[in-house]
Amino acid sequence: MKKIGVLTTGGDAPGMNVAIRAVVRTALGMGLEVTGIEKGFLGLYDRLFLELNSRSVSGIINKGGTFLKTARFPEFRDKKVRTQAYENLKHVDIEGLAVIGGDGSAKGAYSFSVDFDFPVVLLPASIDNDLYGTDFTIGFDTAVNTAVNAVDKIRDTATSHERTFIIEVMGREKGNFAIEVAVACGAEIAVIPEVPMDWSKIAEILKQQSALGKTSSIIILAEGAGRADDLASFLQEKLPDRQIRYSVLGYIQRGGNPTYYTRVLATRFGSAAVHLLISNQYPFMVGVTGNNLTYTPLQKVVSTSKLPDLEHIDLIKKMAI
Ligand code: F6P
Image (cartoon, rainbow, N blue to C red; front, side, top):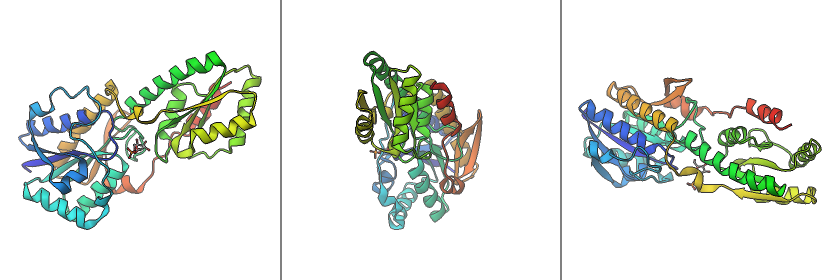
């Protein structure tokens, strides 16, 4: 193998730049050439190729987002589109691909590798942390910290006004992100899609917590479990004496400088991915279990779902007395 490509695809996540840097510098150090592909799978199709050297990735270790840009490109599900992308890669002699992205990217990467027997390694990067085969994805730690900082600020005003706040966080249809935010910010209640909850039950719990002397509360709502404004209206009707407010944290959760943990993880993943490619092992996803690097067949990654740590629901209840 003489030349590899690297791309970031799907929703951006803090630490993607760190992962690109690690892929580029590991590959260059092993005598490979590296081509950056802008805008993910879209750029594979549109030939948005960019030769990278060590200086191309200087000064980005501390930057959120991805300098290679990213895009949602559902057209990549079409085999004809993937075939064109493959032809484009062949044309510029790229012989392996490091794909940095989340669960949608895993599917695209897997199909592409299988279709053309092409070496592909996935570096899991998503704030959602919903990929099977790794305890942590690139960006998750940073995004959880961003959300926790925001919730801490909301708690100040919630306490001062003796209000109940519903805070909607990202995670698409999964609660992996929400549950960690909820534990870390001492939420009174977490509502996630994996543990469906009758909203009347939430009103009951709030009443019980009031009886214990709580004058304000934080409810973390995973976006996949409902809308904050709907839940706020529902609770306001059930509990007219209370002041219910809501906040949707939104895209702030995807930005910002990567934390120490995200940077180290992305650097380890980038280095490991290049070693896999060069030893012709594909299609795999690099991951971390405990503190050890792991390699999971992409076929297993795309066919298995990762549940949030449901013991954390219990922890939240235990802490909310
Ligand atoms: O997958 C990451 C994520 O930020 C989800 O948490 C969120 O639901 C989604 O992306 C938003 O997607 P888009 O960037 O396409 O609006």
